[in-house]
Length: 239
Image 1 (cartoon, rainbow, N blue to C red):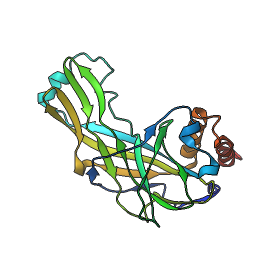
Image 2: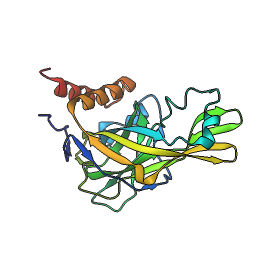
Image 3: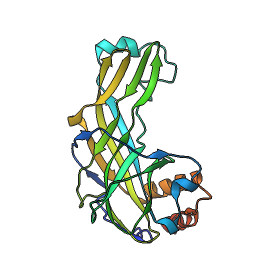
Image 4: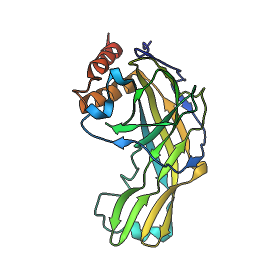
């Protein structure tokens, strides 16, 4: 039995819960990707901290019209073997307020929501900006900007509550999406096929420990570091 994070209450789903196919919307803004950890994480005195990890499992349709282009020598890696974009954008919304959604910060492969006032929230959406993955001769190969919209489900497994100085882990989200190839002038663009998207939410102790350790390694001098260390110790006690 995992004890709840101090100052927070997470509405726990089953270990793996599908959210079914979800409509996709274009993102307008997103996380500020920053480094160093101090400004990124804020402090317990300035509000609660919530983190979530998102893994995008992307697959693409083999389009004969683009195969010859994508088979040319790469400048920046291998499009076929290592081509999924990184999810770096996300928004949480208060359930008890009509105020604007709160964007995340991106650090250590996590989406981080900082300086949250006490209250109830839910993860509204996440995604990535336009991402260039290759430059092949005169062509740019990219992923189109994408937001995976979770809707306004206040009873979702990604709803949570935080108190003053709360610390909460939302879980590991796995997105499975199928991408189609589009050629537009001097660009090759991958776009997720809307009806192909499925989302799974999982949460277990090993994933949480790994996430906190990654965050602590990236921001060891953050004001949050003592609280994160205590959380890791609590989760790993008796192992």
